[in-house]
Length: 571
Image (cartoon, rainbow, N blue to C red):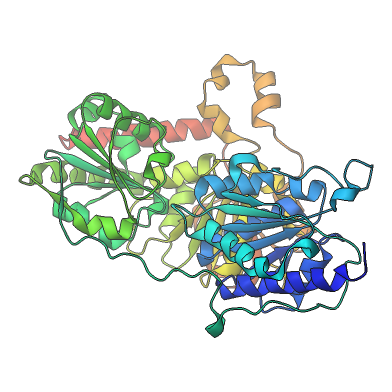
């Protein structure tokens, strides 16, 4: 290639970054590499905050966490070859959980493909259907200057301004020389505006929308809309609000229900509380019991109402439903009840909430030591924190036993694909972008699975992250599944619980992190409070009962709570 292509390439990269900044992008996560040099240098010369990560998989999840905590799209840059493939798990999570990422993969130019050149794979369409758009413009020196800014601005719009946000990818084949002084660049719009800007959104309808009459229920998860709007709708309709921890609605408001999973494990209660109308908004919760009960009610004739643009894509059963389109914050105020409010309906749910959660509070008091006790302690912290919780049991224990709180924490979880990939990295990204201290809760296998995240930790970024590790010697969730009783003990241990010899505390110390090992609730809470707000990372390892004991503890919690409801005449 001609040396003249170097300045053009460098100019394109500076234009690329400038257009991102104009569109409100503030952070870039970069994994070191050679072929990505032109764009890496442009990032280094820009006002973007840079976060360097050696492991590309970790880098993508750090970007995911940053995008979640800031609410803005984040750029992630990697070099060519398998570096691009390492991003796949994070891209899938971002796509399924609607997190805006701008993925830039460097590539070798066309003449180096198929000839044995190193670090060269076919990157075209590498993320398949898991990105909202994929741009492969070819070597940028062949693009007219007039195409540069529209291409980048369109990329940001695809990630942020469609029916729902998500990841986009641009694959950039860079030619040598990779280091050059930038040439001429196309001018941007006046006033620092992006090339394409949204002039405004149509205002929400002020007309009332009346919902079907009868006993209704609101079920909300992540992205359901402002908590105050959701709860106001619950009061206006006279309907309880089953609130997932990620909904932000778990306040002490009397319409809030946090114990639905336990209520609906009682066959009599599940039958007597079957609603006529169910309003669903946001991402589904973790409770299989609640999901199956909703589906059964709908199949039995209950009306389903799905709230928000793209809501139909978050409805796994795909049962017949009415769609209320629009942004949730514009939809909740227009929902009204067309019939008289049945005050006894709401009070029945509220009474069950008080009784069952009161039982949990008593059973999970200071003397308790179990996985549910750890999650309730974190949910009930008096300190303002942001919480990141792993899939598997932690997210379930938080949903089932976390309860109401006067000041609900913002809760993040990788519930798009529900994997344990990159959870520590995600928490690091959240901490880098959040003004509040972050407390993450992960299992021991999840912690070890993402151990490369500890190499940089929070880096030079300002942030506070406390990682609480539930050390139960392997994958405890499998002991709740049929495999536990159907598979021989030795095989079950080898294939499912998979205990590992490295101790999380030793691993954390090996990376120079602050470490506490705790075996009781009082020490756990004091250790968390001590770590909150301290710069950098702290790891708190909880030595917990074995898997079978944990299963029995869960069963006892539910049994006693339902017993309390029965004694109170509620079942």
